[in-house]
Length: 379
Image 1 (cartoon, rainbow, N blue to C red):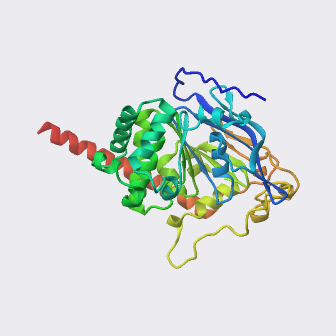
Image 2: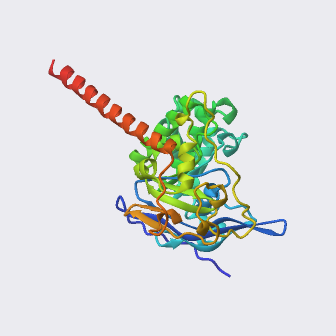
């Protein structure tokens, strides 16, 4: 069978328009004669110019879901159902490497979790960036070298000419991650997928990398799909948040809606697990139990066995999505009009108050800073 290379619409997409839409995606892996369903009918939309964060515990399907948009599933994995539309092309239908090269890197690029394994230890860093630009932008060696130098400078690496010739082991952890980001953006992608890009970095460097990604997004007009289990990182990065559990998106909304008005018990549990909510002398909150085995068919709500607020119906029937607002929805029977009224945990209420207090402090500080600036200007 002959597979055609997808032809993509070159017209720019207006900010706020849906750029990538996954609908009822199912992803399965064959492992020693058994089938593991890693993603179970998951849906999401990524809009032009926004940052969408996918959050959840390890094993919830975040990375697998995102990798499917670049054709980077392992050989024993496949998209077994649903669609993923990017500019009119169904990514779930692409089969060959040639087809994926029209998308991967050129239109959708990825920043990996571990920069040391993402970079080739046997090649100079600059050459790796240059090769990406040459492959996806059809440039000669000199033109792609100049692009690589520009990218090194753009991601904040000083002395790009000297650094171009150095190998990954000569870079610090933060610089290696900057180099991986430079390789991704060298192709001029429309979507940047960041798979836990700050996990291996210390807090100071983490903040720098997050700020770098935000600045690059603004300057290059990219959309960012940010994968993490750290809700503290999400608060600084995301416009919208999708919460995943056991291979499904269980809640989705604007960042403020998730932090201030979460409705799914699993989202409450994730928020309550934030270390910032700990009280001196008391144990930190932890979600009891373990996620379900994805080798088996899950009956009812996958989170029910770990949910102290679970209803009888949660163990029998899978809940549909209930609309909380035009931009906020959650997959829980607690939102059914017939369900008993349940208050969010006190820990989460405490977080909501802390966030409000912090917002008020930031506004006050911003006002003081502006007043000082006006005073200095008038002198």
